[in-house]
Amino acid sequence: MRLDKFLKVSRLIKRRTLAKEVAEQGRVFINGQQAKASSTVKIGDEMMIQFGQKHVTVKVLGLQEHAKKEEASALYEIVKEERVE
Image 1 (cartoon, helix red, strand yellow):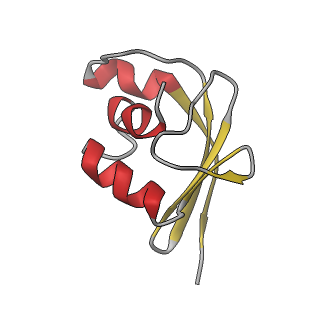
Image 2: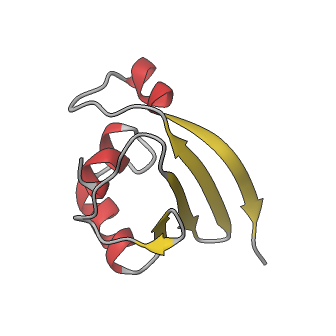
């Protein structure tokens, strides 16, 4: 699954266009490698996303084309959340 679509379906980022912009700015890493919006996400991947002053690391647990709000959080598990000054 494409990175931008995964971020939207999992609701880590609300809109796919915003997910694409974040990836193009170099703020998303998959398994330590900088990722593009078109990068492939697989189950088991570790993803680090920079949200302003916060870095969130998640592990991908599942992939779905569509997910309801209740199911979205089951697609990933937060490994680490840290504030950056």
